[in-house]
Length: 132
Image (cartoon, rainbow, N blue to C red; front, side):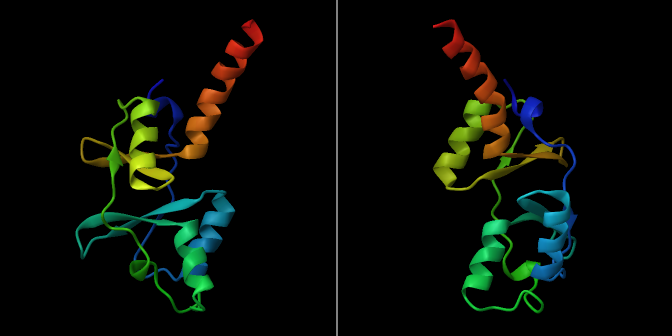
């Protein structure tokens, strides 16, 4: 199975000036664990995750004043839609993260999470178990 089969093509995109509270509200409303941060001034794509927000709040920082830019991971590992789920899982395990931004021809095509991969693998593994 390929990343294109598991990824979500509806990607929450925010700007670097969003507060963490704004980002959290949008992530909660969309029921996603990460947002792609587009920063035209920095010329790149980053990712802000629920863990980034949790770490900030845990440090006592205010989600009303902390900006996404200060908590965004900018050294993003990108996946291609043609990667296998095994390749995506390996990249996540190696990098210690749970989301990959999927790029296709220089454009954001989607996002794939550990949960997406598990959702795809679980039915196949259940079918194998039923056969034994």
